[in-house]
Length: 412
Length: 161
Image 1 (cartoon, rainbow over the protein chains, first blue to last red):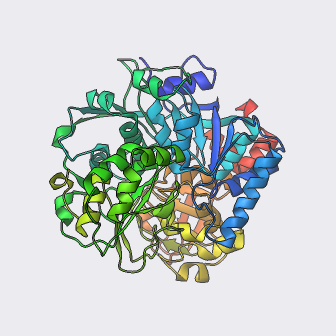
Image 2 (cartoon, rainbow over the protein chains, first blue to last red):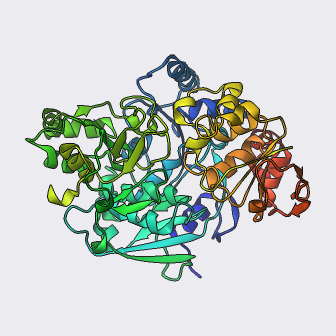
Image 3 (cartoon, helix red, strand yellow):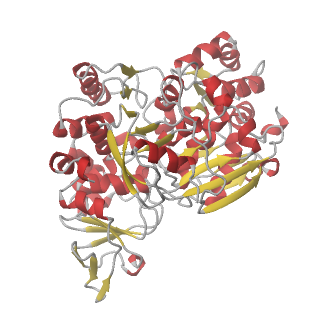
């Protein structure tokens, strides 16, 4: 029997000829990453194991969860992580974007094994790498040893075919999949996205698909690398692994994306997915465009086209946070940010922003936010009686204009 | 020890809301466990009590603050039908015992529980039930026996896996 991409990468990284689902392996990691929220605990674990990182160029620290620091407590944790960066002479320290976006822009190549102390580390698998989220102690261990243990996951295949209708995007496709598969439907599994829709999708859209593998409890999201991936790498090289035709998949899902309508995930769980029509007309207080899910140039472009020359509804705070400084600059150079500001948006620095309720757009009791992010859990963006509705950038932007949730197909 | 019963899909934002986790202070984390979802929990939980829950416990964020908070609050073990993957690893790594028990539903809030970590047996003394749990894979068992990943890497390391 053949192997899947995930199995091949894990075999390669653990110096084995082949591995099978259920095997326990110790793999060499290409990179170990932690951000300002998870690094402090990782650093504590690290120093209990050793005093020197396995490779100063492969341990990466990103400040994105609360940067610039909004509180003294946050600033104090930053100070602790900065000291680690200096003491360990790390070359990879960033404060200019969401960790996953920076990792795809600067580091990850096909065939890599990336471990990150953030659950959405499944995002980077869109470049044909094995990338997974772990906790701080696992990352502290990886920073110390350059290795990590894994149980080789069974793979699920999501075969996406056709083209989406106008006004429907990768976010709608993945929300619809999460709704079908369920919040624990891919528990411990590799989620492999394939099919002509994926082949034709931009890297940005592929990242959106893989980003939400964790919302089905998937271990990793992965997409076979192709010429589009290599072009995106901007000179970086990697090793392309492809799933064999006779590889074993525990389950295979066939999805014709032309049947997908604009979707929303209603609180308090991500698999509570409905077509946008289910909540059309519901008043909103905030609209947020950004995050590792949908804060890329393509997303900002879609939103800009919708709001350009118009005015955001008076009852709405429209917050935009590009996912990285490179995206911020590109959006500026193309005039998108100017158009968004003129329409009434507030542009924040590249970071996780209000997605985790720590700053830049916290919600109070009774408020509703429509967001391009990936989680709608109770209390995530502020008060536990505030509600978060997940949607595509187009639905977010169109709703910001209307002051209520609307079907974006009337606006694109 | 008392059972504190929770439902399915209890996520890390429910266990330790992100707005409260800008700290590595164990005591403080113990105080914020379920702070908004079940505010009486951290105040009333006693050393050694157990959490009993359904499917997919600990889903969501990778934040290790969640199992750390549960452990710091005094909880001696979590019993669930299934655990989310990262929470599962995090708990093993920090030495919080987990019991994967298909019959967790049979336990009610407030029941008196006794656990046997060696055999994986969950004894509901209120109901007179002995429930079995799924044994951990060998490598995870070794990490548990060392008291967590840090000790495991210091003593055994990955070379002998």
